[in-house]
Image (cartoon, rainbow, N blue to C red; front, top):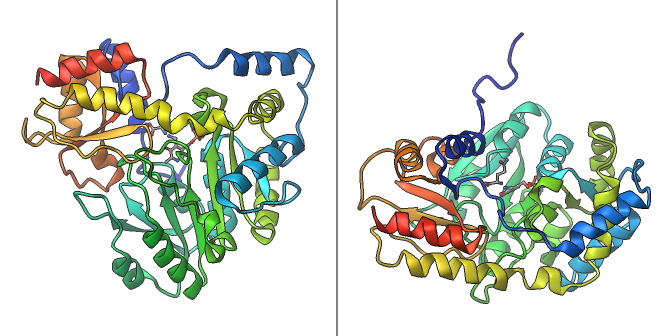
Length: 377
Ligand code: PMP
Ligand code: GLN
């Protein structure tokens, strides 16, 4: 059989988590919280199952949950998405991203992404027959060179994908970035796919500038979110997509035959849990403390860093320690020093700035143990 994705192997998350387990390392590689979930949320899920909410949900998701997401978006961004026809619940943000790309991209269409880019973007573009146009972010600050974006737009450009707060750098696009992006998207009649899964995980009083806040973008964007990130339940695989009606109409057609609907009892639990806004509004504060704990402890280490503005990832530059490639160094750290991380070259077409990504969505005791190891290098 001819492979549709000949260059794809196990993802770096699978590889590093497996290696971490094999060697009994602290896993700061794959991005998932390793602490316990709010018992209230667990009970809501169990209750939904016991109440026999165990059959198919509506195709686009429970209306009660779509209404709760609409309220949250209205409150956060002053943008209205109609629960009836502008919101869809998906199997994590991953399915929302895949489905949005299938909705928009025809064979031969070009899609601009910024590297380092989250790993599910490019294969989805490829499977739709599209061509990925990668634009490297400008280091050391992981900013976007908008002039380069303008230069790379052709008559085949269909879509731009952004991710803010950004995995793996933690950077947040500014109001100024979003204004330029809006101008580019509108002028060139493009679609935007805005991956905002870390929307509530943001620090130091910085504001998340959702695409929903900008009229020109709102009218042309798919926005993805993830309850896995927001409520510490990555294994429940519950995400969502927001888009104006004319785009969502087409998204629904594909979602309907990709999965039809996603977990009914999980949606029911989320609909109840979302009624208290502090559950997502306090998330930045919650993770800022963990970021502070981690960074204070490694202040005297040989790693250099700029504190993440958002997400639960921290990049550490190790160039003062070794000139090994990042994959080799990450492997050696896991096997010899028992701490797993993610080499970011895999997200940037092999470019290797000697930086590793560490996830601090972990129990304090693991953050403390990890810092001790990093200080010893
Ligand atoms: N986008 C980004 C930037 C992510 O980091 C992740 C998860 N790590 C996803 C999308 C996928 O989210 P989910 O787990 O809800 O599918
Ligand atoms: N999004 C998670 C990360 O960046 C990984 C999710 C996955 O394993 N696919 O670490």
